[in-house]
Length: 182
Image (cartoon, rainbow, N blue to C red; front, top):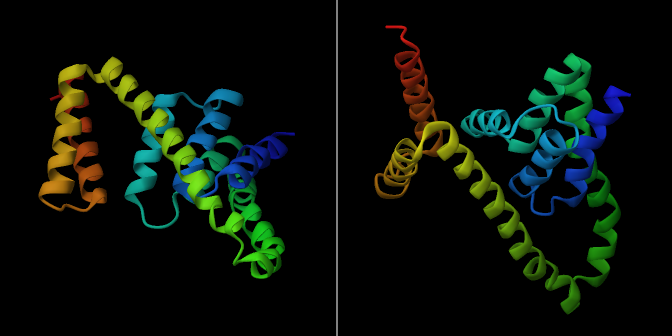
């Protein structure tokens, strides 16, 4: 039963997450945090941050880690398969349909309709992460983290992986310092 839950936790977001991994992140969070209660939102945000610092698609990295923590190696395999299976199935089935109707305005307008929905889902998730950050770290550290990340990525053109790594180092150092271990 556990492997079925792992499968469904990643298969459903894979079906509904039009737009790839980033579009399915809020859906995976809903399943993992909200529905199955396998981790807290804070833990999910940490897994997401580490996953974003690694190369490759984010959806499969999340699936691999969460599947492994819940069901070991087999859980990881099930979760990875579940996260890519909808894309494989839909690609095979819809390829013929899209080829036939590719010039119809309804097909062209699908992206126009879906993009704002994905933007809202990502915005809600970012708001929840920011709110959790203020609760966990405090307002000052949260503002410094956001402003520093913005400055490093947008103004100094640092790669996001380097900014995440720096944030992890600062967070670890802050945690060690605040815990009294010197």
